[in-house]
Length: 154
Length: 363
Image (tube, each protein chain N blue to C red):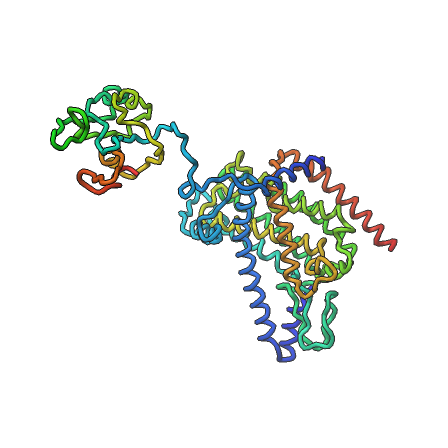
């Protein structure tokens, strides 16, 4: 009996001498796997033009209908995207999104992909509808259309 | 029966001197003991959480203050400001009384434990480690109330502590609390026997119930080496006395909600909690006094005047062992617990008493 009791105490002592496995979450974060499906990103070309051409295929492919795209015609003098149209509004309801990635598969220009960001909780429902300003990839000289950057879902 | 302190007061009244000094010393000792014990109990909770965390490869509380150092304060604030919900149909008087009794008895039991050798002020000749008399001076005992039957006093007080648990369970008017209280009283009464038998060994060897004399008799050789079996018995029964795993049947949160304090919320629960952790300190302190040489230096070349430090170190070590045991072993089944108490601990304790008595008689 005593051998077993001592053996048990030895195991817990060994555990006490080991380094804890805890990751102190908000300060320390585990690296996200490269193909993790987190919040969406709208990409740009290297010259700053948006990849999205407002075709709405993502919206059609979305199984829960959480994507809303309002296309508009490009001004030939100041194009937003290289195509004929661009997305004037692009909204994703993150409360409804199931992060399946079908929008990324449907996209003909690889404008939308799912990114690494996973901490999407918020106190206000309105802030959980990601707008184009929230989703669009930044680039040097980028100014968010209306409103400051970082006002979107955290 | 009356301790030196009390006799001091009476004598002083007769001779018209020293009354304020004696009372002042008692007051200072009492306040100091209270503050130290309550702080220790609060930090024991933190220590318990830290040790359990490390055993489970976690970090434990580390948000309040550096390294979680202020966590006990946060816990206290939480307990005080919590709604003190209470069940309908409770016995109002006893329900309020029981938690206070638990905390008070736990604190009370510490009163006769000496944490240092007696110091002789203005007397001829030092009191020394054997607590010799201090003629003509003031013998400063390092316990709150110096009784020549200190050990008996502790056993009596810890038995009153059982009432706190039983009254709490009874007054709650709740089946879980009542079942927990029933188990608890049965367990505590049976383990009280084992405790009493275990402490008789050192008492026989030192020939005194005066805890200072018991420590003094360990000069050179601690009783843990002469009485290893009694030490183990005392530690085991002490775990049961403090309702700690693997003997925490009274709480048994998986079966009984929380046992006898199921219905206690807020500071009522806090009082029980304080009582439980102070009891741990008391059990460790008694084990230190009886078996580990009390205030004496652990190695002969270390200075004896650091008495309270050695005492605290030994108590701390024992408490760590208690925490370590708690987070290692699973809870015993109730019938096994009773079987272990009556069929293993008690006969072993008796055998130990017989062997020790024969040894003392032949010496």
